[in-house]
Amino acid sequence: MTRTSFTVSDLSAGYADRLILNGIDLEIPVGAVTAIVGANACGKSTLLRTMARLLAPRKGTVRLDDVPIHTMPPKRLARRLGLLPQSPIVPEGITVLDLVSRGRHPHQGMFGFWTGKDDAAVAEALAATRIAELAERPVDELSGGQRQRVWVAMALAQNTQILLLDEPTTYLDVTHQIEVLDLLTDLNRARGTTIVMVLHELNLATRYADYLVAMVAGEIRVHGAPRDVLTEANVREIFNLDSRVVTDPVSGKPMILPVGRHHCAHERDAAASSTA
Amino acid sequence: MTFISADPGAVALQRRRASRRTSLTIALLAGLTAALFVITLVVGQTVTPIDEVLAVLLGDEVPGTGFLVGTLRLPRAVLSLLVGTSFGLGGVTFQIMLRNPLASPDIIGISSGASVAAVFAIVVLALNGPIVSVFAVTAGLAIALLIYALSFRDGVVGSRLILIGIGVASMLQSATAYILSIAPAWSLQESIRWITGSVNGARLEQALPVAAALLVFGTILIRLSRDLALLRLGEDAASALGVRVELTRILAIVAAVGLIAFATAATGPIAFVAFLSGPIAARIVGPGSVLVPAALVGAILVLAGDYAGQQLLPSRYPVGVVTGALGAPYLIYLLIRSNRGKGMA
Image 1 (cartoon, rainbow over the protein chains, first blue to last red):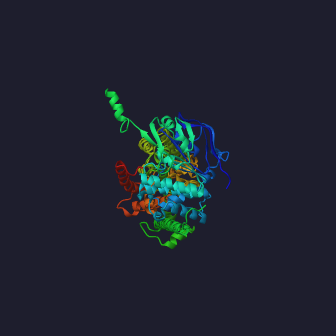
Image 2: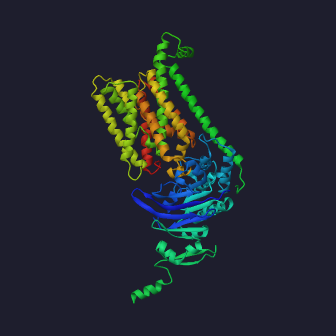
Image 3: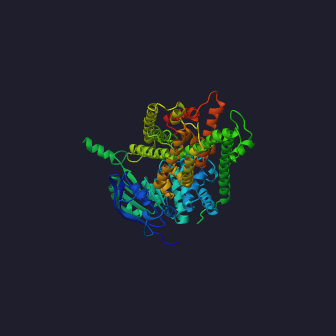
């Protein structure tokens, strides 16, 4: 396999008259799991959408192997770069098999002739996400967790070297969040797929990502290995939040414990000093 | 690249089963369309023997039957088939693209726009022939552009576009009524065509532009059908799968408006055919591609509606009255359902 590179240089982008990203430079580590984190409205989804070519840059470029993605034919790009949007729409009555099969679209010609390779890719995607037995069920009858697995299966069937995901765990309970993140880790380890995801939950991002990108107000404030990014000073800067960083006893990676105004050890002292 | 053992054979089997079901449904719908076409040719006030009908179709001179079949029934059947297909295909394209059954061109004013332009061309400018279709297509596109522009605010939201479209449609319908009312020599029969649609007095030469439009725009839409199906997953997902979203949308709108406008210029806006075909087809085929089934359902609705209006009901009604009576309750049902928070997604 040829060595891939996926880079963002001097990127500015936004909607209508609002500029959201301002001069972003980033090299995505190939073959690793990257998580983009930051407060609400810091531009992390906008960055992901521009990297997936859903949004045209105002300035700067996103390059895949040194080719600007905004000049590549859409199908060719879709064979190499996949995206799971934040809230894709489930058409009424569509079956699991049908939806997962849509992932093969970029690999098929103009008339959509179906080959054994397509069947194999779809079968593998169904098996990996453990939804093979649901294949003929309508997607709109499934639970939230199952449904998210169907979307991941569609992205697997697309079989790209790079997969971008916009908050893949939103609306899922903790069991299903872990299930989806484990699945993405399997994919990364078995196929070497480069994964870039926007995640809300900082501790899950730290545990599952090899590389963290933290954004503040449309700019990248800090990036690197979770151990280097997740410091108390950085968390204060990124989220405007006091915290303790401890070692996660399960993963051995750092983990933050937020410090609020209540239910903290210092609360008693603070209360005492204010009445004094 | 395999990281888990899987069974491609099972997938192939399930996929073939699904596609066989779709093919079977399409074959059944096509059979029903053909049967209705033949019935329209053969069974009227009197039953004409099949061999005489065939003789007329092959160009033989058959006294009496020649006029009955060749001049009265054949143009009617051909025009019904073509406009029904056009309305069905044009309607379902809009419904797929805006992901809403209410987004049909006959609800959001595109059919009314084509209709008012055709009436204006015929009544006020005293034109006839293909130039009338040009008026209808131009007006249809202009109205599509107008409602798109009026509903644009940080992107277009389906429900806003539909409400604006309904308003535009009623304005255009009253304009049609006004033009008809100032035309003193205008017959009631002809007026009804421009209000609810009719294939009365159909002539074969009317079918020609409709057939040409169906060939051109229908081919475009069939070629776009896979991209349109992906658009149903939302613009972001479709784009990530390699669909050129804007291009697909523009081509689909132009093709659908073209189909609707050419058909409307020939028969008037046959009530609710565009609106009903897609949802009925979706009920029948389930999750498969709905484009071709909707086109066939459109043809079935017009052929059956016209036959019922002419032969089965106590008095003779134009086809639009029959399809209108079918469509109105469904419209009310959809509005009730969407008010309860379902069905507008």
